[in-house]
Image (cartoon, rainbow, N blue to C red):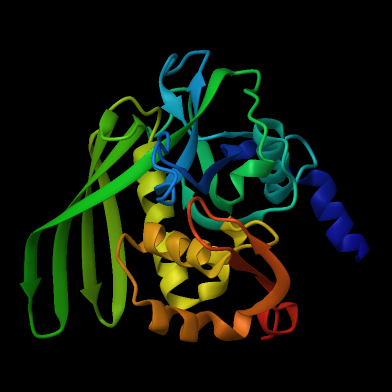
Length: 297
């Protein structure tokens, strides 16, 4: 650093500019059994779950929200996300990836707060829920998504699409605890895409977390379609191919042909000598990740 630059920095007044508070919010997904399995001959139904916390303080007291918190001094936002994740679940080594930044004016009634949103995936059997200082309850919710295209306009060099999404959050099977309605405005113009989201009904969610959760779920689906490896982060160390296929189907909300699916993921799995006794079924072979193929470029 030159003396001239040192002099400039000594005189620089950072307080001349307004500064936001920086936060991290985490959309934590897992595959869990849905309800109680009373038929030992059938595999328990699995569902995609998201972890929400009930806020114990204002604003949005008693509303559900994503786990998260503010960055501490000298703390990188990734460190914030990892810390908050551990404080809520007691889990450290999981898939954790940023997928969006949310800084729209008015998103938080406390002031100018910019949230860095992270997508996290975990095997919930390793998870031990514990609410933080601003929350008094943590709960896994089944999350269901429906969509309806409201408008589509195609011009010579542009496309405009309006889509309405409804997110259902369920504590019990087939029993909606609350729903959130979000509208998506998507514009394709000059070979680029612009997307804006508007919350129409926030249900019982805090802040703009309806937008964040919707984008997290859409990101998860897109990632699974483009790169199968991400879904393995929802699996335990050893798993059956049926369990793995179920995870894909639950995320994508569609049934997959067994032969096509197994051909698609064949390079990423290695058969072990172990097997598991199914409920009323013959033993199923257990597989593990093929590390060599899994982490290649």
